[in-house]
Structures are given as C-alpha cells and as structure tokens.
Image: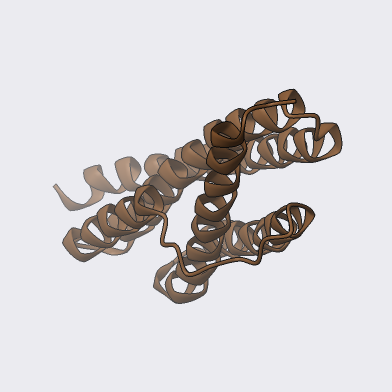
Length: 168
C-alpha cells in the first residue's frame, strides 16, 4: 500500500486537473466568438467540450477517494489563460488573433497531455488501474485535438503569409 502523503498528493493533483479542465471549458466558451475563421471556432469549441468532459470525469475520480471537488484554482492553467489573453489583446488583425487563440490553446493542450499522463501513471501505481487508463485515454484525446490545432494553425499561417504580398 502506498504511503499517505503520496495519496494526498494524488488527490491534490486531481483537484488541480479538475480546476484546469474547468478553466479550459470556461475560456473556450468566452473566446470562441473572438475567432474569425470557422475552422478556428470549431477547434476552440472542441477544446471546451473536451475540457468539460474531462472535468466531469476527474470529479468522479475525486469521488472514488470520498472527496468532493473544491475551489482550488490551478495556477498553471491560469497562467496559460493569462498569456493567451495577452496574445489576443496584442493581435493587430484577424489572422494574428486567430493565431493567438491557436497558440494559447496549444499551450493548454500540452499541459493537459503531460499532466494527464503523469497523473495516470501515478494512479496505476497506487492501484487505481482503471483511473490510470482513463487518464491515458484523456491524454490521447488531447493528442488528437493537438493535431487538429497544428493543422488549422498551418492553414492560418499560410493564409496570413500569402496576404503579405498583397499588402506590401
């Protein structure tokens, strides 16, 4: 049996990742209208939907430990959100605003991928194999969305670069 501090640390991680997922959902709902291109709106919406599903799933993991979600605010995702907001505010046009949305959310995706894999590994080692497998599947879902973000980002960058010759 694992020692109590590592179990408490795992539970704290669950609180943090639930909060991060909640923040991701809320930011997507707020930011989707800032996107110019349909493809960007679609991936921002997908980000929020995936974060919402994961927030609910993680709340269930907390319940497995007899713990209710608390008001902990994940500071890593808060920083991602702040950075994304600053990029959007500094964007001088539609293309750069869309790229700011894409880049900011890609940072969030990278956080989810790494954190979910780490949390999943720990869950497995603590004897919560199903929870661990769920976290690994959640990380893979972020991998897939990350690939969509990369593809849309490449399209937007190409459109932006193509327009340079038109305005120079």
